Image (cartoon, rainbow, N blue to C red; front, top):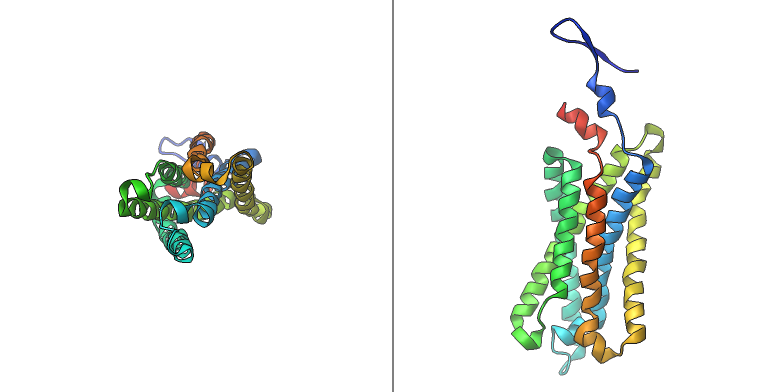
Length: 237
């Protein structure tokens, strides 16, 4: 049922409530939530693979004690798990004020910029400890982006869902995580199939991080064209 409101001049306007409840199509919701989350997790898993296989040789000295170098590399991987709750708080706060669409675009850009810059980093042998410090900072930025992305994508999916399909729509962002996992590991599999260890340590490890720029652009195109969620539009009115 549509609400009818009496205006100041005595005429009736078929209320903004019906307009506010206009939702994106199912395809748009899937693309905006699942595809974006898949890209974010692609970036996240790309770092995990590199931290286990390549970063101990690139950013830490693996010659004297490889075990210590591996543990230090994995420690940088853990930094993002500290940042993820903070990212959820930050993007959740601004999502209630600026809108879900805006925060999802910003969270995707945050993750994308951090990931791309990791692929451009100089190694420890080139700049020393400074490379490790910047690596930790960019990993923290990745965690901020993923924290805002995952919670925001779930919110967009459920707020665009009809009342009888909220669980179904809410599953779309969760599907993005395994898709990102397969994309990331598939990229490394292809690279390692055609390059030896020396080539991967020299330049191959950078490729998945640099390729994320292409995926982020695709995700941004999808999200820029999505509508704000109906619940947020009603709150604005």
